[in-house]
Length: 392
Image 1: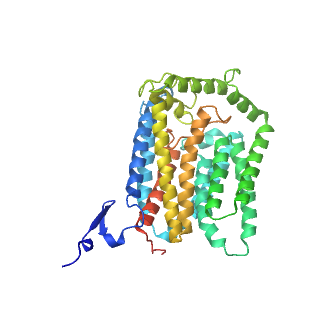
Image 2: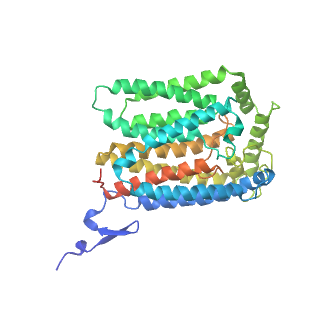
Image 3: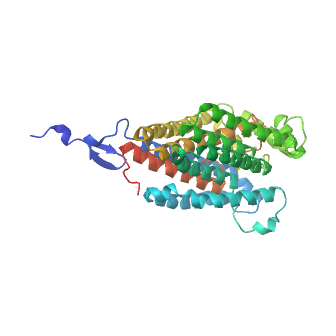
């Protein structure tokens, strides 16, 4: 009679497989990841509608306008995610050939618009697409493809110098486009990618230092940027639009208390905070769900990060540098973006706001977040089974 182990099956994400093929540590990471994403998505959609319905009505739209936009972008993101999941590995790795030029074009359009060098009517009828967000996404894919291929080559020093110059240029464009937080997100995420690729810590530190110095220099050299800086630093002492929004954000967070006012009961979303449905949605989340709600959201975001780090650790054991770098970078990107959004809305950092992943009523940002999660799920699916022999 055969041993019982030969018949033992282990449930793993809707499939049954032999006990001998069981992964080395933990078999439910992909399923757990899906649960975390589903919870964040559901709560995010509820909060996005709660924060955006009044803004939609004041703009002359139906009360569900922003929610419908998010659902529409989410639907297309799910279709794209299915394509990415089954896409051959070689084509997946070269996806940045398509996304990078498009991101650069969007970034330049955003820059010209912010400097009033592009007529607004030129873009009328087109959806608002954040080039900074797209550039962070595309740069991660580009670095994850190129870095493993230059490790053993003599020209890697030239690549680091060229990318350093490119990074300074992208940081400057994002700051001049008034996307301070995106500039920070950009060079921080690039630093994580370089670190996961094995670059020496001191070089990663100097890379961060130079980009941060450039960002501060541009801000201090422009009166326009300084006005925003002081408005965020001293919201109760200045009579500007930014200062009023910042002070109302702080008041909304404070009034949330421990248990919050309840979903839909926020006062400050009713025209008191500009961009409350988008960049400053954290203020509404804090007012309606309170400290307990914030702690639960942070818990799920850190669980999200833990699963991403775990995936990167497994792929490193398998010797797959591309999965290691993409998994680590996208995990940190989403979580750090959420933290930046919370800090900006709380006026902890003197910068304009940034979209909060899963929560902000911004269709394009929501689309990119789902696509990044699709990459992470595919890689967890691969590393959880301990194989991907396909490098077709």
